[in-house]
Image 1: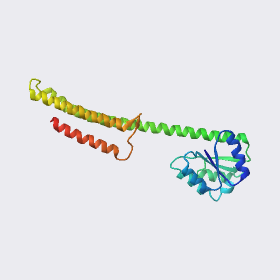
Image 2: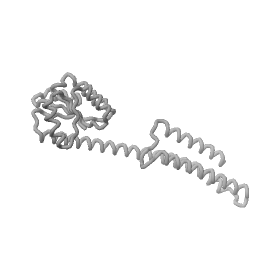
Image 3: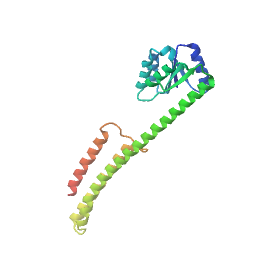
Image 4: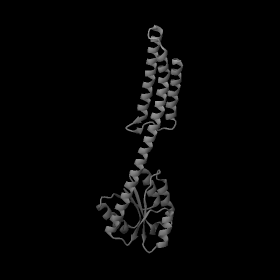
Length: 229
């Protein structure tokens, strides 16, 4: 969805009609404050177009809208006369992403917005890939840590099995108990892994939760190791 900020009825119609014909959804606002409220309430806003002729004294507000939109980059497009080169440079330095030069024709306007939408789609795809990569790194780290705990639990059991006398009822009973305890611990580790990961994404993302789970596993491993000693 596109927010169009202008009080000019004719300009709004010239922008809205051809873009809606192309399938774009346009929401007109007459000032920066109303636009800011809409952006915070509507997560579907992906582009801001504003009329420079009416907003030259409010440009700081528009840039503020862009920067405060919950970390999401919303392209900011200024409608401005092509001859105002110095103003264009100033706007670009302040953070405006693109321009619609007046006078404009319908084809030029449609192509401009299509190009912006493609960039938005590409940017979102790149962000999604970055999130997937970070999740993969975190999952790999978790698996490595849990594998370390499993190996630490198996080592004492393996050592006891090497020295245990199968003909000795006490050793046989002890080996059976330790095997069950070790298997139970490994089961809990695997359950922790299942609970923390789901469909290759971290399910537990709250700060401190990962550390708390690992602390519990470490505590139980220490108790198990003492039992195996």
